[in-house]
Length: 530
Image (cartoon, rainbow, N blue to C red; front, side, top):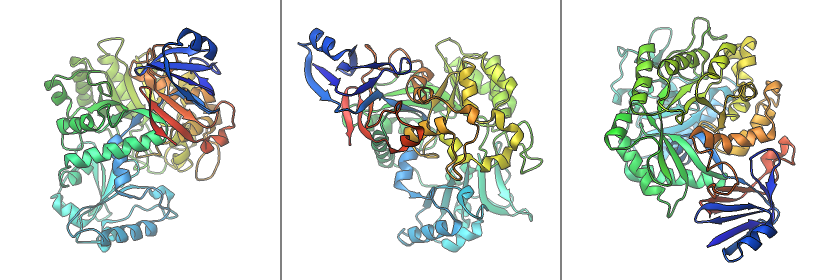
């Protein structure tokens, strides 16, 4: 039977300021949206349940277009270092945590960020050894493109002073050519491979905790990338199926599939967009470069604060092209992590050499933080969307200026330019790297104000409120070719809603942070209620 939603503002997101008075849903689908009286008259025999919004505001359900669902759950389970403002605070937290940890068990910390510290020096492994020699220690940097390890972890991993850097990675060494315990990009795997195998229950708990937290933040779905890190494709996929089964948990998961396990996906009979109602497969994920924080993002010119360093490609050019070719053989779009402009250029060349096999397959360029005018012109020629993370502006400035210099700023985080040029964008958080709350992303896209100094960076790139909200509604739907059934409040669309206590289109951008999620609705069911 039908359910009527009324009594508040309801935004369709079809165009700016368009509202309806009521929405009728049935079996997870919107039957009608329009004037309340007309819907009541036309569907009087259908309406069985009524939901009075009591003056609150209903939007199409917010979808995070780029995050790591299991990683976000791990952040909730592990020692969170992301808010610590000094190395001494971090060390004390590690000592306290180690004191309650059984001897020999790994001490794992998440999200440290030296740019938040008064002295932004990356700690040495000897400092971790002073905390504990009885526990292997592995501390993931906020960008997840670098980690710190103590000597015990390094020994377990079999890494020695004679070990060489893997392609796309670096074992950082001091002036005397000794390891410091800092591992960048693909070199991280040297340490991670020594860690105990992830148990099925661990993965399912991480997914469950993550989804429950996503609901609290008004998020009805997410495009996630975590199929290659937790014991293989089958094990991770099964954890999702066991957890998000449409019964205890309803949440729309779109799984990007890392190129390292895509063959297994195909061998098991899966393909693009196959799956269940709530868990489906997406594009093949590739990493083209690293991160700006660790100076491994691949730039066309030197880092301003590190002359002679332009970052590094994860793959040699020919290998990257072969990966794209393999995706096309499987009729898959690609989703490529590209932060630096040189990485974007390499990916565009690969796409142009091996374009998608169908117009319905949209490639995804993830991050694209640093561009050039010529690259924007090339982006207009390909069938690709840009996955942006608006809170990168609020967290990266002003320190990022030290990395790239003032002259590269006009094409840094240039989202307004992209949208004005007709290049589609979708909005995400990259959680657990950034905060999961989409309201923080919307605020960052509109204000472009840094958290650290409160200044606005790139005022000409500020988005309108409608553009910002669209990133998480119509933008996320378009990214996966579902713009005809998701992202709007319209007949025939999925009954996924985010209900807030504030009208984002009637308040100032500064007030966005004070908005609260009242309800999160997936497939017509209230999965979270504040």
